[in-house]
Image 1 (cartoon, helix red, strand yellow):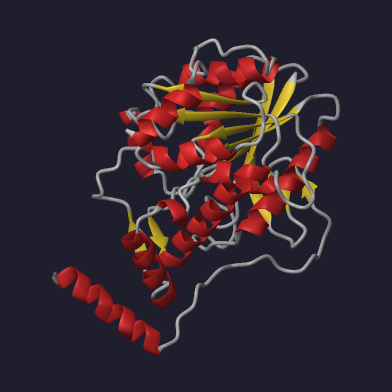
Image 2 (cartoon, rainbow, N blue to C red):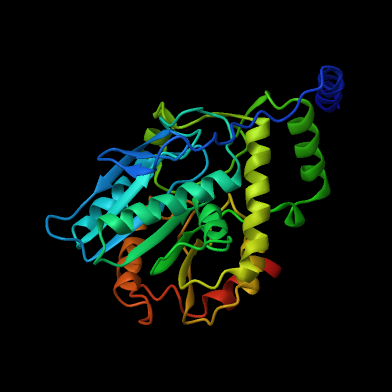
Length: 332
């Protein structure tokens, strides 16, 4: 096993120079957080690029969308345009270390991401005081949404939409994965890793995936300590499930190869809300990128329906016995 021996040798050499995770944590408060036309300005002075899709008339509802790992705000271009055509505005910003945001490639910490989301929610609500406000998180963004809504100061929202939330925490990983992550992220935090060649397929939309792979704003090679930060976040999100009482719509695809079924089912089993308050939808043809898959319009319309009336069954029927079906698949 020459590959394993090489990793161990590099790890031993790295330990000699005393490496540590190189997170870019928030700085001190230097200004008042504001929402500008194309930027979210944070209290520590960072300018996070923002995209906004608005309907031609006053929005009947507003969505603040949090993108996934190594992605950025343009991830919501397709659904946001569709929602805008139905009277719903969407705000999305490049989170710290991603897209065109400062400190590209460096992890900022779960607390920082949750604080930014809470700040953005407050500012968006101030801009649209008469419209219901919804927080949407895709993958990593879903984990951030869960942490945001279970903190000490929970922001006011009318509902949360979790799209394939990243809840694959350490307790649901095998020993080998946990050991390798700890070893590499502690001894070689600067090492960059790529998911290429692993064979995981995030979507069935090949045209979108080609554009995604060519997009220079999408991070292709990830620092080991940033991966560790993501796993820390997923730990926190899974732990937060039992305290997550906000009205929510949880969306998951049966063909998801990125976030496994078992941790997703575990997270759902811990949610304390009633089934009609925390609705689950399971899509047989859905992959991880549910909002960009070939059947994405079905998901977009389910989100619109739920925003309009959270108590009405989804038009696609994806919420019928979804929890039970997912639990059966996770244990089979």
